[in-house]
Image 1: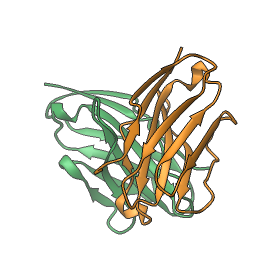
Image 2: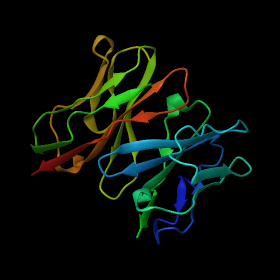
Image 3: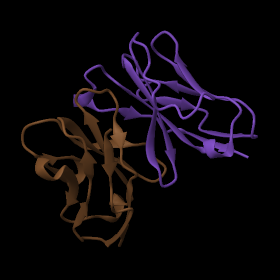
Length: 115
Length: 113
């Protein structure tokens, strides 16, 4: 498609359940990023994939969070044993290799609510 | 570590007023600088960016930003705002030797007719 696609757009889950959030980047974009947007907290970097390189996981807040990117395209962010503090909007962005001239393209996000 | 500060959390203006949103970053090396905008119900969009050259950068919709290296600042300006500028504005910084884009906490702008 023309943009970064994220699904689901909204997810309500019970505390303790696992959730999977999906990101489909723009075709040909080699870099993919996950951010978390919480009220009053801005955008918090979570994880970054670039081509076939090992991902930069330095932003993942706990070992309950993990992400993978299959075939250099679609990415899945998994949160295990969700907690209420995980409630936020999870944003995915992708960019071409020369990302600093093109900037990131963001998806519309997945709003996660843990009840 | 890099960090970005946006001191104006919520700004309320009338149409035609001038706008300046502050952005300061902490990093001693060479940086790339960005402003993103998020209109209500929409995804983040790039407003403008600075890599090198003229420190006064022009963006879309009449916005501009000035990079002042000595002040570690990249303030966003618009001489006359419109109701349609109501949105949340995020400043972001990337240190040239890293791959991460660090965002500020955002400034919510409300423009009243």
